[in-house]
Image 1 (tube, rainbow, N blue to C red):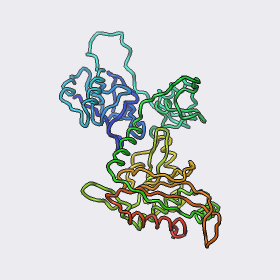
Image 2: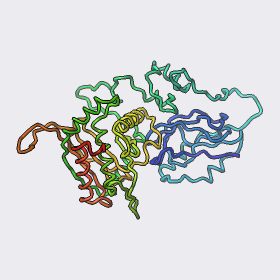
Image 3: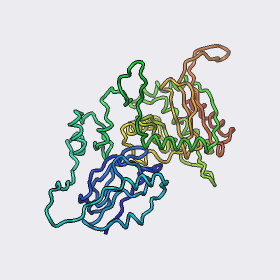
Image 4: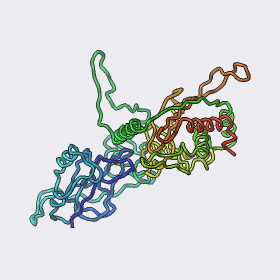
Length: 417
C-alpha cells in the first residue's frame, strides 16, 4: 500500500526544510534505513533515511525547493500502484497559500506506468554503500565530486553520522585559509557590482526567532563593570597546574552558573500563562559559524569544574563549526551568554535567546587607569550587559544577579568552593 513520506521536523525550531539533494530517483527500490535525501534545516544539513521499504513512486519536493514541515516529501509503494488519491486528499499543515502553491508546482516527478515490454531506459540505480577508507567515511557522491574538484577528503570535515562526508560538505568546502565570502574576488574600479545568495535555513530561523524575541519580549538592559585582575591571576595559576587550559569565558560561564543558582528568578522562562523557574542551570554559549550563529548548551554548568566546562565548550564549539551538533546539544538552555570580547568589542547588548528570560553580553577585558585606595593605578575591567525580559525579570532582580556574578569573578575562590 502506498505511503506518504513527509518533510521531517529535524530540530525543535524547524518550520520548513530545503531538499539539498535527492539520493534516489522515481522508480528506484528503497529499503528501510536507506539514505534517500539530504535535508537542510535551520541548523545543519542532515541525512534523511527511509523508515519503510518500497518503490519511490513520487517526489513531492524538487532539489533546492523549500517546503513546510509535514508536507509531502515523497510517496513509496509497490511498482505501478495508484497514489494520486493520496495527493488529492492531503493538506499541507502550516503552509501559507504562497508556500503551498510553490510546493504543488514542484510535484512533477512521478513513476512511469509499468510495462511488460523491454525499454531503452537506463537501468535503475542501485543503493550506494558508504565508502570507508579507514581514516574517514564518505558517500560515493561526495567522493565523486571531490575527485572532480580536486579536493583532498582528508581536509574535509564530515557533517554526517559519525563524521561521514556527504555532498553538502563538498559543496560547502573551503580550502584552508580561504575567505568565507562567496562573492567575486575582483571588483572593477568605477563599476557598481553586488553578489546575492539564497538565504540559508539557519539565517531564516535566526531572523524569525530573534525578531519574535525582540518585538514580543519587552527588553531592558543592565550594565556593570567587573574588576578582572583576580581572574587573570587565577587563570594563570589554574593553567600552570594542569593540562586543560581554561579561558576567561570559562570563568564567565562558571560564575554565571553559580549566580543563577542563587537567583533562580533570572534562570526562568516566560510561557504565556505561567512562568517557569528552572532549578537546573543549562547555559547556552553563542558560537559564530559560517551561516550565522549556534548556541550549544553546557548542561548543569553549576556542578561542573572549570576544566570540565572548558573541555565541553571547546568540544561543542568545534562540533558547531563543523555542523556536527546533535539536537540534544543545542536544546534545553535556561540562560545564554554571548561573548564578543575576542573581537575587541568593549560592550554591546544582546537579543534574548528564547525561551530564556535573560542573556548576558560580555565585552573584552580592557586595561585602563582605575582608582584603588585613593590612588590611580592600572587595572583590567570587563563590561557586562544583561538583557532582561521585563515580563519575568524586574530591575532589582536582574541587578542582584549581576552583583553576585560580579562578586564571583572578583573573588574567584567563591565559585570554586
